Length: 106
Image (cartoon, one colour):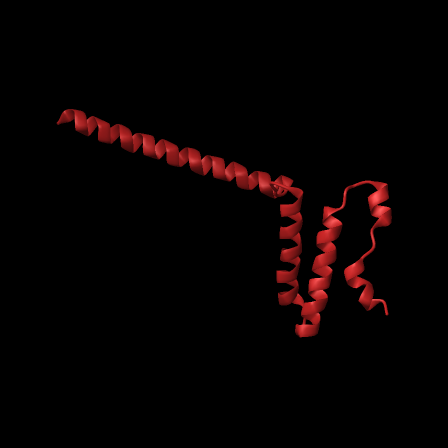
């Protein structure tokens, strides 16, 4: 019977240590995000989240958001995504043209 009590005490101590280690790790993780920004698993994932974040935000901050502004927001989101996916070299940047926004130049 004493052996079971000792196991319970050790299990409780181990649980507290694991919990404290988790809280410590989480605080370091949050600190890293605040100082160094979020890292993504892939460039495509980052670009998708960036573009969709734009569209969700613009709905809330743009006055009188309607269907026409929604379509414009989708076009801008498309361009943000395409720009984000570009390779960082002069050739790709020079050859880029904003096709989703061309209709607004007329």
